Image (cartoon, rainbow, N blue to C red):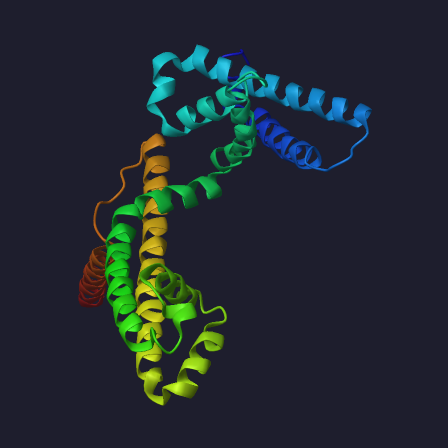
Length: 271
């Protein structure tokens, strides 16, 4: 095995995953206050050693792929998060050193199942943006209504637009919303006619629609990954939908049954 093919080696990939996890442990320990100076020095040296390994991996990939390296978004991400760690630790750019923790995000690229989740999340952005837009309109309309209804009764939670937005967002999270709603209902018994429809329309409808879009995008990402794997093996993947594939399978089964029935009838006639 030569140096160029090293990044594709399964053992080397597992080694890199181990280094990422080890680096995560080191960065966590470095946040502990009042560590002995000798331990701080050791942790810093180990962190630098991990960085050297990451730089070696990136260099080998660049040697093997050349400009093709930057056509892969994950490679660009790895290049950036490793490059940030090379920024000097002093001066005006020292704040960028805090971004070295993003090296741990390389774990997403190293584990296929985690990478699939991220691809699904990115693929869901257009759909989620539409749902988020609808949700924002609903929040804005509801906030204005809430100010008009409850602004004088409960100015602490519905006094102005910003505060009301925060209160309604608390309703979305389902965290402590009865503590806000019950005092208002004591003074305005029919206020439940606003709170309950708002929760039903936002939390139980819009947010569930958002989750559905994300799940569907993850399924599509998984299917695309399977198609790529089949293409690498020289197998042609079908572009038909799942429902259409089931219909085609049923048609083929029906055709096979008809041929078997005809063959059986012919054999009975011969006998």
